[in-house]
View 1: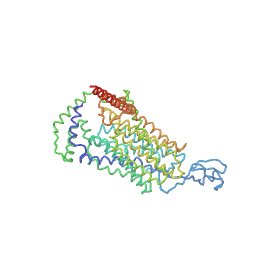
View 2: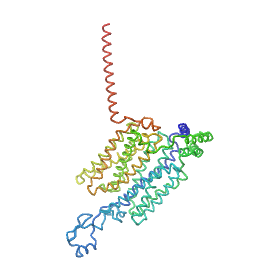
View 3: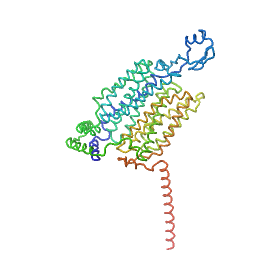
View 4: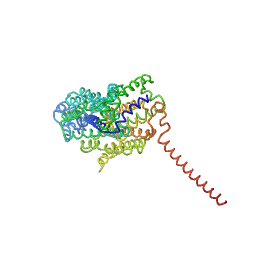
Length: 551
């Protein structure tokens, strides 16, 4: 099977690392990341929950009083006291329309005992992303990246527009679930894989980070459009129409040559590579007959192979099992903190649209910083540091009183800084996972990690409901999860400047005994050994001088 990989790498090497063809295809793929970020966060404006005040209805005046408002007292936004001194639950609210003229939350009253409705609507989308990551990822491996990308693009356009027109809550939930499958899973994941399979190894880190950056730009677009369009129906329609930018991709985008080659469709793969060579200005002419003949040998060798691997292989041996569980927790923690901070930005003091925009904007310097330092500092220390700082920011933000001078501004600053750190660690985990696991299970490991992230993303809106008991609880939970994952990341092996494992045996042996703590001890031992050798050399030189003087 190694010879087959060599043939494919020989063909792909002619393209170079990042020529005009790769740049053109990458510009098409990354639009899917932008729309994914936009669709993921639409409920932050379309279903925003403004400040509410309890309103006592005429029916309640008649039922609990004498028809007048005498003896009634509003306790808070959820309760009032009637003339007989009984506490009653509010059934009608008035909303502060300073920033939001209309929203699903205003129409369906996502407040007080009905807050779960808003959380469930966001979770329905996140569960859709989870299902999409599992199902569409497998379908892309089976049927091709391009077809799944395009089907997802059309579906997210249709669902993104139609969800704005649904008047009934439970139908809305179903459509939101389907919207999640195609809106932030299909095009994003397949676009990411298409890019990774096309560009050279030296450009994969930068291109991967650019996908994260495009996602953040989509987040900022949610805030920008929300500030301009006040009607929630037209706002959602505008969000959905962004996917129209993907409609032409069927004719502009090419299938992955690597996927075609793996399917035995050697001629089609070579045709795309030859087209890319012409676009890149390369004079190379591929020998189609030679590679086609070798492609047939590939099919025979694969049939005689040892069969495909499964996810259970990641748990059969102790070192792989420890790395798998550690990485899964890392994905889970990054996602739950990232979406927890993102979904909570509307609750920060100040203009909610500005807070949302800044929450996306702070990711830009984070990704630029990661680009420059990740290959210098290594993955392990950087991801651990960023997660620990992000966790500390979550916990510290809850302890700052907002009613003191500068308290609100300090909270905003700490939250945004924590968001930048978590965004950076979230970006690193993609590359780190690919480098930690062997080639035969690399895609499987990435898929499992992504599933853990989508699962925690679906749980995030539910955890945020815990603020009913204490406003500090959600951020504290997010912070402690980040601290735990950040500390345990120190037990993962370093991968920078290390050869990537290929077989299961390589994966089990890779990084055995390599933790941050063992590395520190080894460095100290090396330092002490060098100091001892220098001292010994001085003693030898001194003895040599004495012998020389005697002579």
